[in-house]
Length: 336
Image (cartoon, one colour):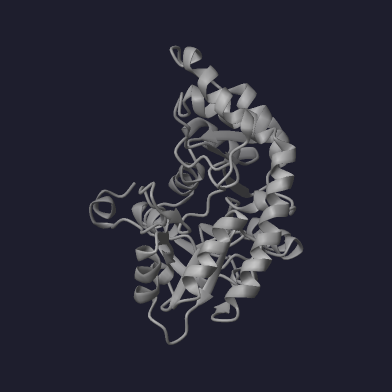
């Protein structure tokens, strides 16, 4: 990590509120949690009095089944962002150029700068057509945050091939891919996949995730991973959550249905982006983003001011929550 960059690079704004009295549409986490996870969390207490298994083979096996790859390719990390940092810290050196999509997750640009690299900003919907030659790394977020669209699988595979031919590592952030039925790039040569259990399983505070890679990339990630980097509760709840196939299927059905209902209603007032994710981005036009967010906050509803994303200047992002909660959001926004 570059010392001067670490001293000067600022923090990236994110959604989520720690106020339990509000209805939080600013964070894109599932409002529901698999029923068995709470029991696994409590049952892990006694085991947490000892160090977790190292390496955590049961967790790796569960993760491999979850994304359909070989267990040896799984590198456990405390959340998806930790997987992203691990990948960028290994691949990017001072002076390297990195293809970074925008608008997209702000931590990509920050992590590249922390390594002394130079982010080359590319429109998120053009990055799969960009020439990866002479770049140390290319980053793709699918579905993209905050716009919501998933990358076309064939176009993504073709881009992965071009990156591999160019000697450019591809980092695929699949934090929201579990909300879709699209296949993961996990196990694809030349690709590092970052996965988070935060979003789909509603567990942002437990910090559970993993990276996936093959060959030399796998070996480097595995060697760089800190021992005991996931707690026993994180490992045990993650193992249980990733096996909850019916919960995953029901979540996908609910999000798809509620997302379309919200999109149709919001489109009567705003320009709404297409989405495959558990959130919607909309352009408020000549209205004030600040005024809308403040109005909603006064009604006990928190929205995500999306102007902090690179390239957005009059946008708001909202999560897709439970039906009655989404009704409340529409009720509040009807008054703006």
